[in-house]
Length: 226
Image 1 (cartoon, rainbow, N blue to C red):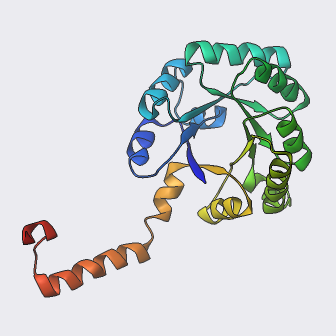
Image 2 (cartoon, one colour; image 1 turned 30 degrees about the horizontal axis):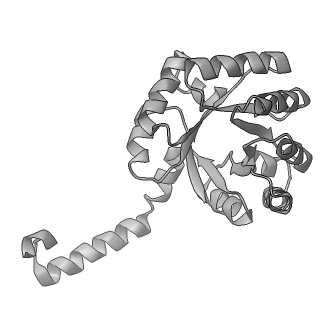
């Protein structure tokens, strides 16, 4: 079980990665839009400097044809670093590009997955990660958990190295359901996790512990007892 941040916001990545045990960062053009007009390569190098080389960094292409995807992938690898996972939409041209990139030894994340056949093909193409869109599938009346479970069954039965990187969440319940269905990892907006840990019940429990301590020990910390 792993967690990634679905974000390109430098402040959020720095702040929340100190709290949550993430293993990487994912981004796409929609996420980058929130940062305004940026220098893509310089910005993603800053992200890399924050998370280090031991964590995965996923950057998406925008070209739709195989030749364009390959050109953009090579530009990303040259201008950020050669360990970046290239996010490729799982289309016919995307699958063609994935196979070519894997033949070069490039890290690949197959994204925009809504159906089982997309996922199966991406696994067969050798993608390192497949990213099923949980909430978007639900909006289309597709059983997200059943789809993820099918991916996991196929991966396990074939001995594939592909990991399921569940994405597109609107609440934490969807995140936990995806993991319980068999996803190896989930990419989540930092704010969603922040909200989950900000629930009133957690704050009340912490406050109650403090109140009970003060009633017995007074306003003194544990370190002051030594």
